[in-house]
Image (cartoon, rainbow, N blue to C red; front, side, top):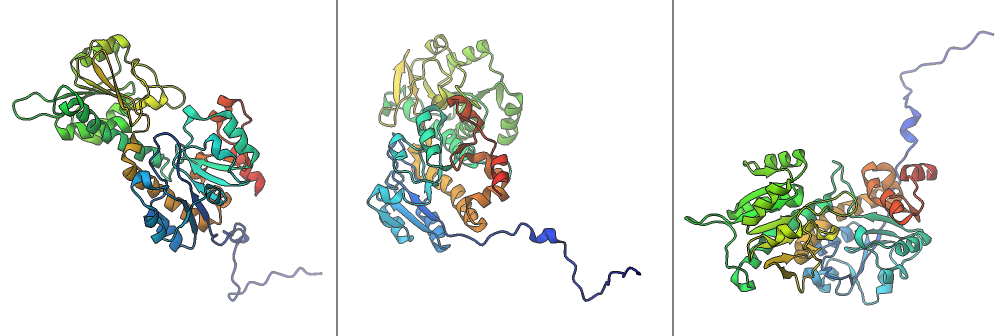
Length: 404
């Protein structure tokens, strides 16, 4: 029997089947809750009224707990006019599918969490407890952290914005405590004709250090930057675009510079764990009376040996006649700007989540989002957290591949 040849006709349309294998689902409606933060010194809110308006106009429901935006100068009316429902009972907010918070999940909030909820919030490694993680795991929570969330370019957009705010604020804070109004020594940050400029030492050439340097230079101060990474020092040099005085962290050079400075900024970051102490108590004792230390890295332990955590109510203390500022959450003191910065990242992320048909699909299609997920349906997917609290770790990529 002769084999029949396949018929090829111009009227046929040929299409590979792979095209239709992974069909994206239709968009889904999100049910978002924004609780009022009760944690210490937290004034920010993760979504501004304008962002809530965009989400509501796209067909999503948003419930905001009464007075949730007060710290950032947003009223309940601002939110209700944008289409949000105002809840007077915390429980109602915690019944939403998605919780968006500007502070980490607390002990009290664990009891209110619903099974299979999706939470977007910071982690704050320094204050995270094993008990909270275990209770979230029991309730099969999926959680995304501000600190680890990456954008398409591989950067951490929320951390970067908060670091820019903290860096820019540092010099404004230092200026306050150098003035007579706050019992400072009466020095104007910067320089005017005929008077040598104020001397500012910045330890750490990351984003906080860069923005502190920008602000100090704009005010007319003389800036010296220390960091052990030559790459970071070069990057600051290139980003700012003017020749800066830079040095690796060498104790003798650092000590000599600190003796004559007016402002010292601690802007060292650490990838995990505590920041190293690079300024000893002895170095601080030799600083000029009335000079100011602003330790931005205090949330990771601080890089000055004499630093201690302070609050927005009592931000400073004196040691060796040197004014120490150690508020860990500086962006919260500029809550409206900080809230807008967080909202600019989260609002598009939520819209994208809806377009993809929910968080499970978003994680599947957007690889960069995976770095932010530290818990997926109750399974811990963050290696640092699993090591620190001795909990089981599962690779998120394996998890989601097995669920497809």
